[in-house]
Length: 142
Image: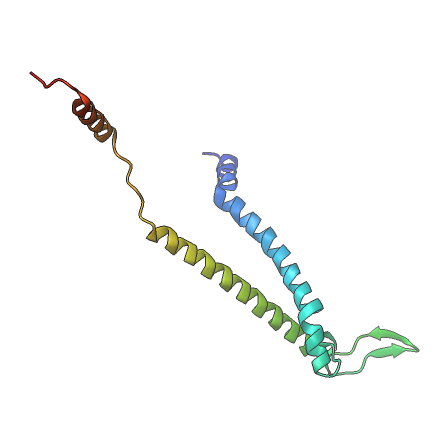
């Protein structure tokens, strides 16, 4: 088997396509969660802490290099506000994924609990039909 045909067979398999779809949906979900945190969750928390914007929180380690009023080089800083923001994003994503997995597992348990009605085989159907014909027959067999 040539390398190209092997790759084509691999790329067309459902697992690769499923993975690609999951990555795209995951990226979109990440953007939604980021917006949820930045635009809905953090403003009330910032207001409760005296109007603090968490993304602006940082520990300045060195002063920026200035030429007049222009910043030539930013000073070194530890941006712990961004870290807090990222942790909140992670917690919301983890909670959402946990909820989805829990719901999917609950649906799987319901499917497993429902007994499947067995379908009769061809032989059983034929024997049932013969039995019904013999029962409906008016004259006894001789």
